[in-house]
Image 1 (cartoon, rainbow, N blue to C red):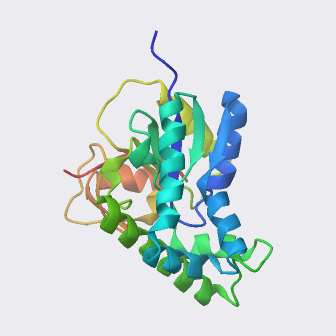
Image 2 (cartoon, rainbow, N blue to C red):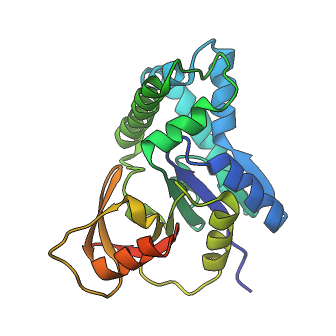
Length: 243
């Protein structure tokens, strides 16, 4: 009998990984592991903000080695889990890999709505957007340098979900519906059609096919279907990544 798969989530800061991972773990009755929580704890112990700790980790590779060995050991244990981590997809090779994307301004508003603390606080929306972007790029460069792993390459994942307008229960339901389904084209992207830029010269009515240049999606096929999804108020429309 096939062993039930671990689910790993990563994605944009402010994308709802914590909420979705908690709900998934509760629905599946499995343990949740959050590397983000561990990083925040370590940042606080060092008396640093989240951005400062990311920059510090670029210079001190012992931090990543500790976290990565922990993830490697957990993956090797064979326990079914829900893992909230921006690099778990790299270590949990047999997991179902989910990436959450969000409009940057929406993500910044969410982060601003959290209680501020010594690790993470922002004066206004513009500062939140800038710091979240800087933190994400710091992580991307660190992972590229140490592992040759680019977290922004969507083909690393089985499912990409857009949390800009979709609710956490909708995201959880979409993940669970695909978890045990047949393996088709990867990744499947379930995106907010209002965020996808249209090309008026491509008015065909087939599947929606998109290209990605973070944080933007551009439709290269399926514009008629895309317009219908926008008209119908959809928040999670299935699309496919261009080859």
